[in-house]
Length: 82
Image 1 (cartoon, rainbow, N blue to C red):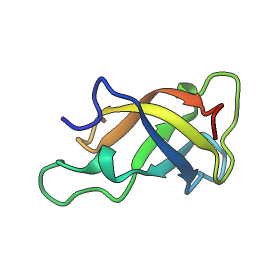
Image 2 (cartoon, one colour):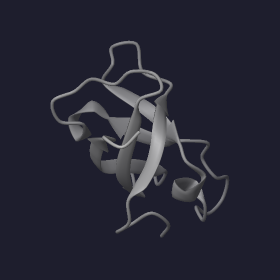
Image 3 (cartoon, helix red, strand yellow):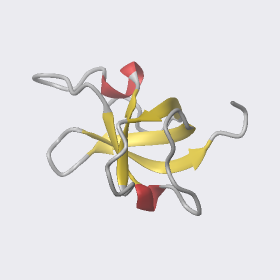
């Protein structure tokens, strides 16, 4: 599966109204999903320790299938190099 065991980088967009989750567009992370490929990767705030999402925030992350089989980010960290 794409993205597993390698770090991807993307920008946060589509933040929920209460800020508990967001999405990140990353072609490498969604490439290879069967059926209709999702347009973005789900990111829950609990994956980003000690910070809140903001639009355009750059993150490093790994990806795995979520409960619904669509890509979900984990091991999320705020990019220090961007």
